[in-house]
Length: 348
Ligand code: SF4
Image (cartoon, rainbow, N blue to C red; front, side):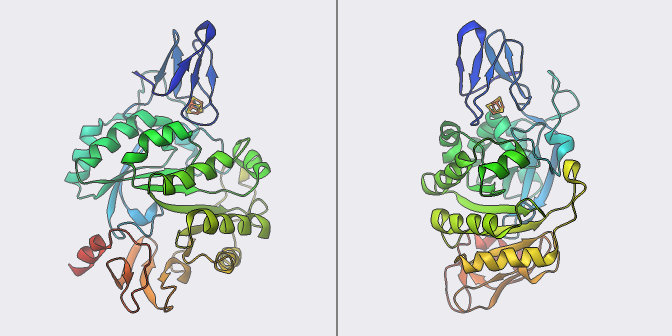
């Protein structure tokens, strides 16, 4: 076990974890809400440092991240546990699991070995994904620091429920904050994910962008009867435009019934198309339809001249007409970072 970062010692050998806004006050011998942090004799330990449940080399488009090193491969890591309890979690087998105190059954991958693996498998970066990266903060921070010296980029695929002090510790070492915006009211967040107040998520996304200059992309999994109404979708789109900028990509993805929401139906394509229209009406430039392979809403169109500049099929790029992050036809800036990777890839 490794001693946790960012905790306080309280009376009676209680401790307070300050990694996420739950700020759990954890009694002696108990764990926090996420099940991964144990108070042993008044010291807080993480039970999942370097303990991986899932490792895969994925296209960056699978995160989904469409405007950062498009076409590159990213070595992706997950562990066990989560600081939210989403009723529809697609990765509930790992996200709702509790590690035992030895982390047995999980594969140990040190930060050094993770970097080595990424290079060996020709990946351009590391991503912490599949379950919430914030809960193995210590491991992701140590790994992200190593990436800085190794020429690898770093991605958090996150629910965004992180404290400012944790974000400020890892901010200098993270390149991408791929954040879920699940809805636009606290009632929705409470009902869907047991989050009492979603404002820290919005604040974290803004801080990631403005204080730490991260590349931010937002994802909304559009769930029938939960967040598919005009008010939720328009609220999210307007907030992205006003707080993160018109060129921030917004992915509206198809919900697949899981877990406590197994009784619902998958999101109709028309609903996703309407969400995309709402995004355009609110002034966003890049709105993507997700989990509908072959839909034209997977493509990037230049907001300047309207031409198709990146054509995709699922996670693959089939056409790429961008030069230095700009439209090849009219030179409009498309907020695409690191396009040379894709150019190199597609030139071969
Ligand atoms: S990271 Fe876990 S233990 Fe820490 S505050 Fe969040 S839910 Fe509680």
